[in-house]
Each structure stands twice: as C-alpha cells, then as structure tokens.
Image (cartoon, rainbow over all chains, first blue to last red; front, side):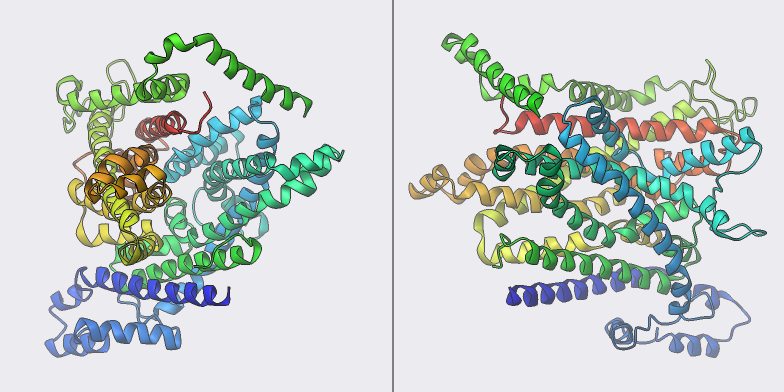
Length: 322
Length: 308
C-alpha cells in the first residue's frame, strides 16, 4: 500500500505540472497586459521597456514559466498584479476567508440536511416523501445556480423586504456599511448559502440514498435482523457506518470543486471571495491574479482527489493497489 | 420492515405471473428493442420529458417562421411591458418581445447542447473503446491524459478562455467538447474492460475476428447503454454551463440572444421587470429537467440487469 501511495502522489505531481503548463499557456495567449501602458502617450518607450522587464515579460515564454513556477514552488509567491500596485498574494489572502466561510457554511448545511434525508429515503423507499425527494432533486440539478440565486434575490431579497417592511436578507456583499456584527453577517450569508445548498442537497441526498440502499440489501444486514436486533440498531449501528463511507469520499471530492462552485454564486451575490475575485480580475484584465487562482483551483482538486484515494485505501481493504 | 418484505415478495410474484401469463406463444414479439421500449414507456416522466424535448427542438427549428416578432425588432411604444396577450413574456427595455428573444435564444442553447453531446460522445466513446480494447500502454497513456483533463478546474478555465478568446457559438461548442469528452471516455473504457473478457468476445478473438470488427460488433452494442445515458447528462451540463458563462458576460455575446445572456440583460432591471429574469431561466430548467428525465428513463430501460 505504501507503494500505491507513492505512485498516486507522483501521478498527482505530474498532473499538477501539466495543469500549470496549460494554465500558464492559456493565459499567455491572452491580450498583452501592458496594452494600456503602451498606448499612453505620456509613458516613454524607456519606461515601457523598464516595466516590461520588471514583470519579466521580455523573457521568452518557457523562461517566464520557469520563473513563475519556481517562485510559487519555492517561495509560495504568485508574482505581482498587473493592474493593482501590489502582489498577487496580498490580493488573494484577504479573499480566502469569505470563500471558506461561505463554502464551509453551505457544506455544513448540505450535510446536515442531505445525509439524514438520504438515509430516510432509502429506509422508506418509494414513500411519498422519497418520491418527492427524487423529483425535487431532479429539479435541483437541472437548475442553473446563478438563476436560482437571481430568483432568491428577487423573492426573498426584494419582494419579502417590501412586504415585511424591513430587510431580512441582503442580496449582495458581506456586510452593510453602517452595521457589522454576527446578525448582519448572517443576513448577508443566508441567500448565497441557500443557493449553494439547494443544488448540493439534491446531489448528496440521492447519493446517500443509493449508498444506503446498497448496504440495506447486503447479507450481513439480513443476518443482523435474523438474530433479532431491533430495526433501530440494524439501521444506526450496522447500516449507517458503511453507508456513510461513500458520502465521506464525495464530501472530500467536493471540497476540491469548491472553487468552481464559488465563481458563479459569489459573482451573483457580489460575495468578496476568491470566486468573485476571479471574475473581477478577468474584467480588469489582471491576468496574473486569474492565473494564480486557476492554479490554486487545480491544486485543490488534485490534492482532494489524492486525499480521498489514500483515505479510501486505508478504510476499504478491497481497493486494489495495482 | 414486515411491509418491505411483503413488497419484495409481491413484486417477485408479479414477475412470475407476468411471465407465465404471456406464455411461450408471445415470445416472438419480444425483440430487444421492444423490451427496451416497453420499459422506457413505463417511466412516465421520461416519456413526458422526451416529448417536451421533441417539441422544443421542433420549435427551435421553425422559430424564424413562427416567432411573433423579430428578435431585434425595437418598438418604442411598448417598452418594459409585463406579460400580456400581445407579448406573452413581456417586453424588454427596447420594447423587444421577450418570447421571441427566448425562442431565438433557445435555438442557440438547444443546438449547443445537442452538438456538445454528440461530439463529446463520438470522441469520448472512440477513445474509450480503443483504450479499453487495446489496454496496456495505450490504455495507461490515454487514461492518464483523461484523468489529467478531469482534474482541470472546469468552470474557471472556461471563464478565462471566454475572456481571452471571445467565444462565438462555434468556439464555445469546441471548448465544451474539449473539456467534456474525457468524462465519456472514462466511463466507456470502464464498461469495455468489463465486456472484453466475456466468453463471447474471447471466442470471437479466438476464431480470428479482426479488432475493428470486435470493437464494432461485439463491444459497442454492450456499451451503448451507458453511452446514451452519459450523453444526456452531457447535454444537460453543456446547456447549464453555457448559460452560466453567458450570464457572466463571457459566453455568447449580444446581440445574438442566448438564455444565459438574456438573463445577464435582466440582472440590472429585474426588480422592476421580473419577467425578464423569470422566463429564460425557466426555459433552462425545463430543458435540463427534460433531458435528465430522459436520461433516467433510458438508464432504466437499457439496464440489462433490470427486472421487468
């Protein structure tokens, strides 16, 4: 198994290397980041050359890539922003916490709703509630995240406010200008969390249901029933443990995808996290920031996949190590 | 629990009765295709979803002839009107008929879904079948590449590409196919691995049937089921993703209407003109829902292990 982990880790590093090449190359195909500067008549040719050299843009692309990846790997340094007079790191650092807050909250909400509901649906298969859940989860993953966000903004943000006479949910940002505090934060957090949760509850609860159904038909559960254990003990002690295993993996994998999910929801709600930052930096033409974010996103996916695989090999002895 | 056992029992009896009831005389009427169609028909949501999809695609094809107005037809006497009999989905800030624009937008979204589904399936299935059939180093190399593609941050990458290349309907299809075919390849390859060691394939190989013929005649028919189901998932995903990046202004650019950029248009004024935010989104949900129901029905119908 040790050899398996080593090989799996090596593969992850290779994948990450190719990802970084693709990401670097894609962004390098983009527009010249210094166009504005070059068109500005008050900037002399010498200045342009000096700034180009300062960003390392005078070097051939492979050299640029080498310097870029070296700084990241050795110093954790993503370089300088093209548009804002500061380092990419300092821009990213202040945007991390809002994303963790938003994604963490919605993951907790999702797990708390989806797992009990999935287990219930499996135990009461084809009951009215289970059928409703099946139908609603189809609706859930047929719904574009951004549109759900828009409709929630309209109904719970705008209409509810004018109906109730005061504001319950804020539709953008993370805090009000005048008041900050836990209640204010919750008022801002609620809608994006609901948006994200609706869709992942749809996915997770169905997943949990089928995992539980697999377990419910297994022989050892029949044995447990046959020896006279109560339903409660059979479900909660015998079935649940094995049924939770696949879901734990799914949660681990979905952490890797957090960044992708964040882009849309954060942009719709102007939530000041990494996803909104990506959208923002693309609009500003700040490609160094976009490049760093893509690489972080890729690294997160690769890392979580690796972690899930390794964890699984520990937990499930049936995994083969070829 | 007692109930569940009784359920299981009666289901089984039902099967036995049905088999006995139909008797041997009717066996000739049960070709593979008929069995699949019978099972599919029973899934009413899938049937309905398929029906609605056919209608949507027909509407998309004949839109230029049946659309009530022109999609860029500006009318300053009917600005920002809520839905009415003359404008079923209302009008936008230039007095353009929203129904017409949704219809034209649907042409793009529906064609894109179909194209991405078809091309991803074609490429993915070909690669998957070759990779699974030949195995060894070819398999290791292609699946390594596929795994690599699957770890790329899908949506962020599309957004960056959209910013850099300014997507047109054609390039957005190309980009989506590039990112989605690996899913199909992975799935098909797994299925091929299960099939290729079956006795009849081994037998075919033993009597000297060529590789191409084995792949087309013996392996392909056994992977068509999972292929079709995955294809529907890809169609739905493509439509959802296109709408999202168009909504962010990085996908299909106005004046060409697509469901995504119609919603982008609606964003700033939706508190006054709710209909502009509602209808294009509703069309996306309906389309994706129908495709997903269709896929679910096909999964049940094409599953060889399913009990009648």
